[in-house]
Length: 316
Image 1 (tube, rainbow, N blue to C red):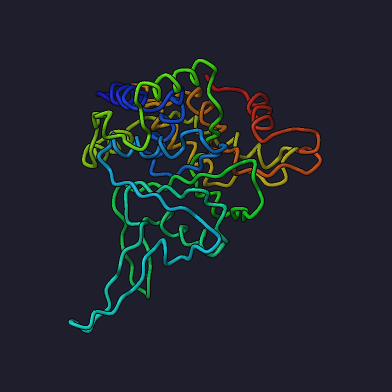
Image 2: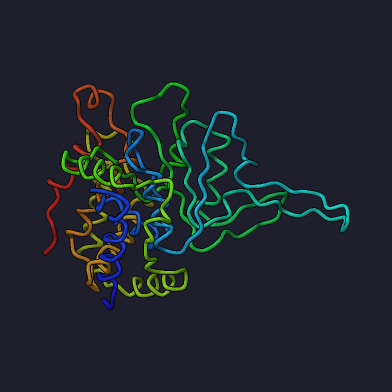
């Protein structure tokens, strides 16, 4: 497909000037944005989750807002509130931080369910409803939520309905020894993550370019055999003896749309089974619930999904 592979390569390369050894995560974030989805980043503190979101927003000339989720955060702190204007005798919306292109919901599981639920309508319908009035969100709009997989004290588990609205769950791990050494070298020579402007990163796309790119992605062809393959994978998660709750129909849609984006970014106008397999883990790992005895045996969601994929014949 025209220019899509070059665009992907430029974004990954330019982001690499600020972030070391996270090319896969940057690409998946870009895939999610083009697919119209949201991302849950899970990793210990200090693994550049905030920096990745901020850098990608800069490369796409998009607005970026970070909200620190805390136990006392209220829905109005995210959505905004209606304020009465004495001069006009009318209420108007004082917009909250959700009215942005890139919303970083930092440590999302530190806020109670009522506050987490404030994101549901925005993530699904790209709008906010306050006092019976609907307010559309900017386009593009993506929620990038972070959570710490180690620390559970003072946290509130995300409800299944909320988790299912994330297109991908990406695990952000420590980099290699070489990558950590490169990070130290960069800081030694003056790099500062709090001052991205000093890097003079070159924006790659703007909002209008994203709309054109999405229109191009919609034309990517998907063979009936690949659609059947996606269906079989998702349904197998519901039939596996290791899984208590399988993936939803929304998971199958996410796998299809994500695969079309991935194919386009690889310069193809058709989806391969390998596209589906590559996205299976980030698309499904947060949408399945393992049986307790399986977890006690040391099995992870990724391991079970790998077993599911191995048992299904790949279409030619």
